[in-house]
Length: 252
Image (cartoon, rainbow, N blue to C red; front, top):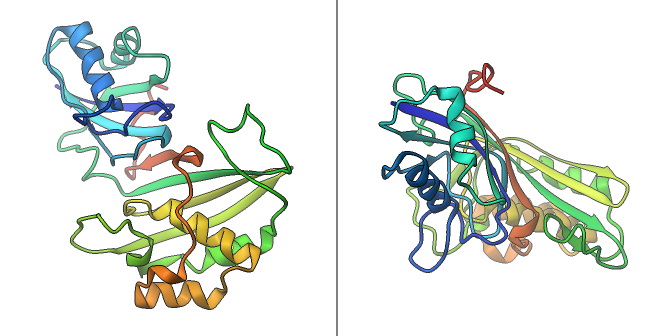
């Protein structure tokens, strides 16, 4: 039977989602838990592969499991064998033809920042520290330039191998609460390092190091020289994956 799962994880100590030969991954943690719980080898396929150090509150994956277990009980069965840094928040029977990766319509990421003269150790695991203050209006003005269908070649890591670097961003905005700032980006799909580089570029515009024209030209030329730095993984969280219907509504 194919199951769908909503998974949250602290990505700090993982090498990313995908199984790697030189580190422990979230995918491996789930497979190990399934082996302990059901005695079978299970592959978990995610909506997308998060990078090393990136977190998730709403990652979605699917898995084909032979064991006869009620869909709503699968989450608890796996959680008994998962490390503290990973939790299955919900589980459900996957609809016919469902594929966590191919069926996804939208994904929403948040990049967390805090602006302060000094670091806060209680925030540093999930938020990037920036000294000083920022201009939230300038951040939002820069964010709006990314909305729509564009070629994000300049915002993609050079070693990425994809058929096309054209992506659609449905919304992008920044919200401020005290010293904390959240940059939220929703799109049909994202390139490797794309959101983290968008965040760095928005910060560059807010600080005056980059201009509105730099963003516009980076999207038209693909020049990496016109964009900001790629921000550290610690601030990035995969918040939600939208399939066009409520996949887990009955089991939350």
